[in-house]
Length: 102
Image (spheres, rainbow, N blue to C red):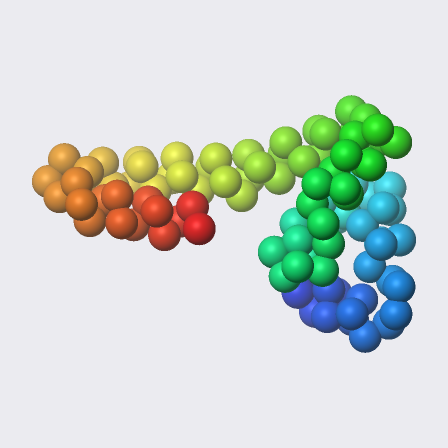
């Protein structure tokens, strides 16, 4: 079952999202929490502040790992694959880079 389907199920089962994004499987909780926030099912600021305060380093480590895997690495990969595009057509390069970051 994919993460999107898990989030859909949490919306069908009343009050099930919050206990799941507060679980101790921080990698899973971060992934689901970020997806829930994108769909406006979760307020990032309150959730992240609470997790930082209550859990600390393990949650922060999981969040930083998610950022590395899902933001930093794709941008670095894009830059490696498109170095020649950046030199020859900077407008197209910037358009593609912006699309990745959205």
